[in-house]
Amino acid sequence: MINKIWFFLIGCGLIYGVFKGIDMGSVFLNSAGEAYSLLVTMVPLIVLWCGIMNIASESGLLHKFSSLLRPFLRKLMPSVKNDKALDYVSSNVAANMLGLGSAATPFGLKAMKELDKENKNKGVATDAMITFLVLNTSGVTIIPMTVIALRMAYQSINPTCIIIPSLIATFISSFSGLLIDYCIRRKNAK
Image (tube, one colour):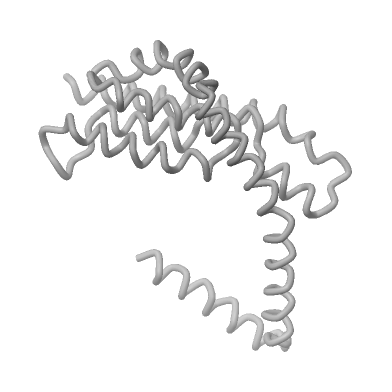
């Protein structure tokens, strides 16, 4: 399905470009060059933060931070009895809070695998899985590193000014998502 959507969007763009008389060859070449320069700018920063996250993980700092989140996560997902699953969920949330989505992904995949071990109805998401997905998708971000890196790549005057608005927006989205999840779970429980 997503392939069809992308094909449709690219097709619309090409048709628009042809009718407007835009030289599509130069657009493709310029875009490729811009993508390359963005990649060269962002990869070192992402590698640096992934390395810092690995050091935090190996030193136990991530575990300590995630243990602070554990009581909160136990309240959000009371049906989860698997401590390993909660460890992965809290590590994923901690990495997302630090703006390290690429470092959080492996923890998220492992968390879902562990949560699925408790699932009696395979192929159907449990309440805990849905809550984790909501939390992962809308999670509070304290330091939005990827956005800061993009702003730095495009020579923003103050690339870190996004921190407070990002914190407010992600807090509101997390609170709203978790509230809706809770209301739907309560409605389904009746």
